[in-house]
Image 1 (cartoon, one colour):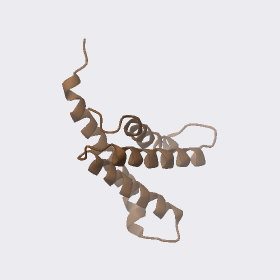
Image 2: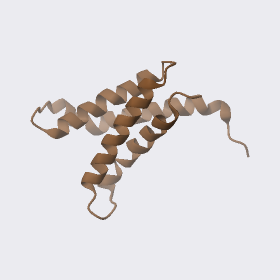
Image 3: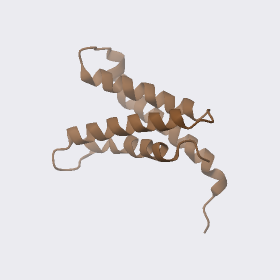
Length: 113
């Protein structure tokens, strides 16, 4: 069976939307608390900003915004994964792998169709 190449743009948009929705639902409560003394607030703010920019980047012909947003989300997710890793994989740290893998996809492909 051959892959459906014509659905690739739709699949990319679904990845963008799911990443942004995942970041929103995961980090909204931290962001909404607006606790400037908490490092978690800044992580949530960075996730929010670059999650939105990865959506905006999909409307542009230039790849730069998508690639930079993918890089930032990927690095932040990997950092949090490493920081939270205690020697065993559990659901608590696996939450960082989903945004890292989607962000790495956009880091490596940009807006290519």
